[in-house]
Image 1 (cartoon, rainbow, N blue to C red):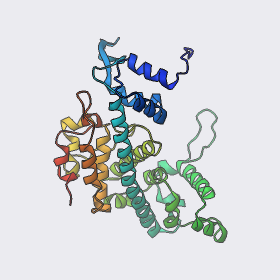
Image 2: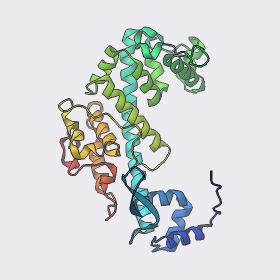
Image 3: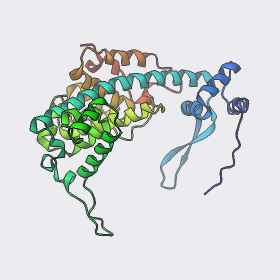
Image 4: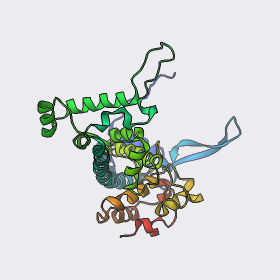
Length: 331
């Protein structure tokens, strides 16, 4: 393993390094200010699509591209500044949409399970076997906690950490026993997604139907993907051209007509692009709050994307003509 030997660079040295690699610095003070505001690594992360590349063939005979340290002609610090600002506004809009979805999903999970019983979340009978069965360690033979038991432990920790007045009420009066319709209020999307993945199909399908999702599998995938996007946004990481580690499932042709374009050949190549998650959010928000105006604001924001010869909204996985689709039209 190599030893890291690169030295610390002052802001002025960072400016010189950018220049030496072909980045135009049209306003020195603005460049210095941007570096001091966001840092060299964040700035160059946004400039990554502007780096030069050269083709090569790997050992398996596959065509690849090697990314070079030089930037394409005409690349400037202004390109990074514009993308950083666009991405900040995109993250804020995404977080607003996911907030609406997360709060609604809390309600649906609490409502559907609560009808079964106040403590349906603690009853193994309400979950699939793979969620409640305790695995055996193949080396030690020890019985390990089931996914359900692990989830309950995480929820207990969540309750213990909460400073909400209503949680303290249940802690003091009911020995920390909280009904599912109250408990969901302190659960994040990740907690809800794990619980949903373990639900018996009857519960999960009813919840999915409330959002127009065709199955538990599809709804679970959507929640998992949106949780990933939420975490990226909440931690202020670059979002616009990120390849999704957890891509939302694309419904089969005819199941969800408004999302049918995600199965088109051109869109299929971009399955891990952010656009797929934005499309799913737009679809879900139609059943949650059709008058939020969120989809229209996404269209407006994407219209301000700082396109260049080297970068367009295709980097987000957006297909040609996407904004004209019915999914994005005001209801």
